[in-house]
Length: 339
Image (cartoon, rainbow, N blue to C red; front, top):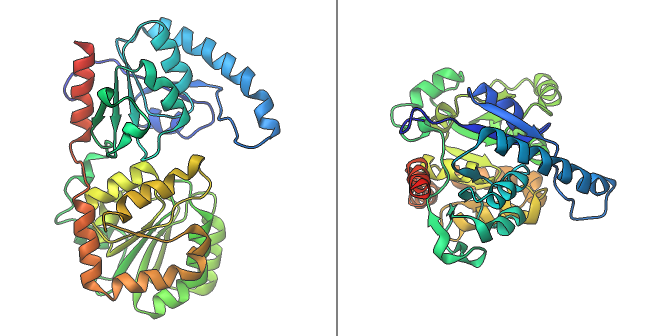
């Protein structure tokens, strides 16, 4: 919109998923499809998959016919499949954006007819035709591009103590049970050690965590259901503990702070572990397996907060993996496709 203000953009998402709320909040229109994922194991949910897919293809066909897009972008969500399939069958140019270091099944199928495939990690020719690939990175929110001078603002915003080291714990926008359990297990000792924690629990776990924290009475453990001012949270942090979703990893590369990744085991093809390992191989982050997280949570935090040289080396290596110009690079590829 910044480069081409007259552009019309329509989002298509999966009914009941977070995008149906977040996209309108950002000021864009969105249509929802009943499509859902195919479970890898035998479940009752798989019985309705063919019906939902057939309905989604019909609805996608109507949406494309009505909106008449000049180009269609797919980012690998459930709705990408039907919409890009319809667009490709009508000869409309399509661009795929694979956000993870491991290609999803939908994108692998759609790649055959895609005009361009933009990726966030090198060596993706393992999954896609090399001639169509462009290494762009993942677009991230603009306020993360420069955090200098924001640390004090972050400390004020979240009511933190400027004399204590700050640990930021993020389980993704919905929260992560493992990270919340790890916090419950270690929060007393984290405070006793002289640290403070800014802790995003996610909405599913907030009430339970709030009750436990109130009972413990720990003034330096700062619990939030959801953090909107992520730039200030990142700026205030000395160490970050996070899941390893594609966009979290891209953001954290830009932020360039010492990071402990705890990949979610509940995702397709274990792609979060692969995302985290892409950083670990470069000496740019530490990986703590989900199964070990509750037991070893504080040990890993201590290791980074008490070894400044190690923490700084990780942060510097992580910064080198950042791709701050991803949004512009993607727009440039779209312009080429439209030509």
